[in-house]
Length: 357
Image (tube, rainbow, N blue to C red; front, side, top):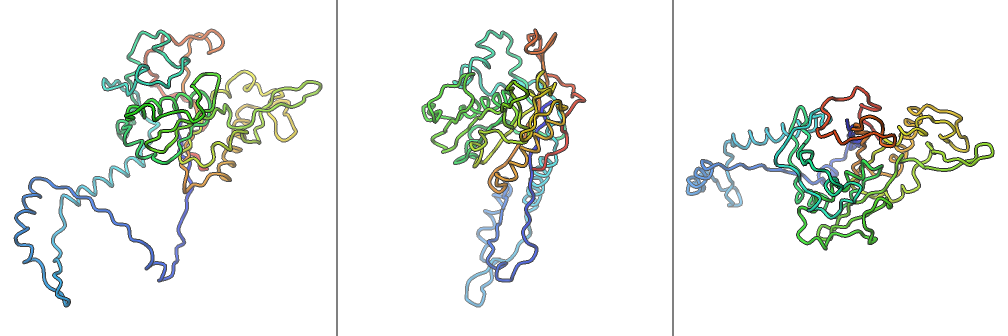
């Protein structure tokens, strides 16, 4: 199961303020209006008698008398608040996959950004039902993705994905979904002229009409992959106390989506023998769960120092279920029989509580 956490930082206004400061603060108002046919008819009838409901003040300007508050407006406002509260309180990680004939949102023929390694249809997959599943939370509904609305929301902003191939999948999928609202495909391009391939791991796509970018930067562990001398040999190590060297590219983003997990289950990472490094010390052996937690603390500390929570929304994704049977991806495992999603939630989870960055 994918664990998606939104990193929070709380910022409170000072509780005391001078009278002058209070006067100078702008007042934000929001009005929600709902007009039924009856409302319109009522307003039409009331237009001719409007002057009767007004009384001149001292300056001779007619002042509108207060009338009864519309029941429809009150009910609509309450429903909107309840809907927003429900979405805030809803745990979207609890739910199930449901089959929906209205999907997919894109195909390999409609999206030019799917590289050959992720092109299921192009690589010979015959069944198509896997494209028609959507996630249904247990306690709320998620609106269908609206590419035009999404592009308006990220207008003038940077959306940055950082992580392994799981996040790369999400990044490519986001590009493909957004392309559904683009009128001129030539106005979407990679800023360095790169074509998406498995060999390269850093991309920045610009949507010209919306002045926004959707970017991906590869980082399997979020911390620095290094080398160190152990005895007479120079070996690969993982600096769990140092952030990835490419972190400067992540700064200044408006939306940051991080992930790491799958590479921590590889044999060398899992064994932890002469692999995890802190400072100049290479641990002879360190448990992978301890190393993983320390690496995430390094990442969280970097976020505290370099991310402005007033500008940037941060999300962290951990793992996704393995669909291999009869072995792993590099030991003869196959996933050709996996035609339906896994609806049973695994009992295993590295972090289930919400992260506070």
